[in-house]
Image (tube, rainbow, N blue to C red; front, side, top):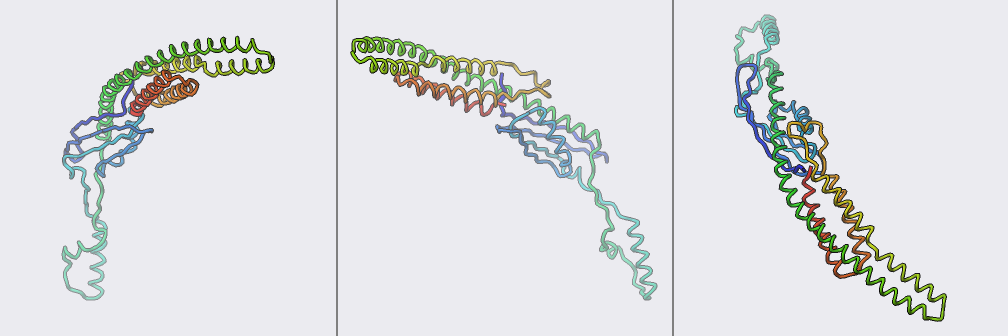
Length: 308
């Protein structure tokens, strides 16, 4: 069984803050294919401090792919900044002003408007989430990641169906190549027997031995049995990787499921073997089957690019 790198899930949770206010937090996670694990996060400013923790949770579950994580608050002002007056600073300002008035005989009263123009008389602090709210958000992120894994499994089943169709083509075409190669070798052997009989009737012994060596060399180069055996071995290995079932989604934490890279390397070996077969045999039938095999391998490679 394989997992697709494509998935989507969304979840909304109530968020209760220290001051008694509440808001609805909507978490959206979307994943697309990528060579590595990458993240793009869009959070409200006051939740950005959780980004590293959230990425760790997502990576532990999703392993590979480009992960887009978005969080949206229904009440954007719920996590707004708190403004409090700096009373000690204001007291110092007023004492200094009274001292100036007394020193220079100024009778003008000090108004609120004058005080508000003074610097640093307010303390602006962001409202912080308590540990309970933080734990709730991280648990929700983990739940969303599990839902994404369910989607990845569903998409993986569809990918597997398509890959299995192309594997059937590979098996069919390789059976045709193997059969055609046997007939071709037998036909070449018969030609060699006839040629050797003609050589044996010749007078020049050195020339005869040279021609015999050349004929055996040609026959050896045409033998593709070794490549066929290796191709079948790689194909069985790929089928084994495809059919190995993954753990349930709620048990995927810490599991190694990155089959996509392994399958990609196996496909490289399959492509190498079929290229060697096509190069060794100039037979038209084998050449046509080899082209079909190459097409099927590339079709599988396209699907494997989206496998975790």
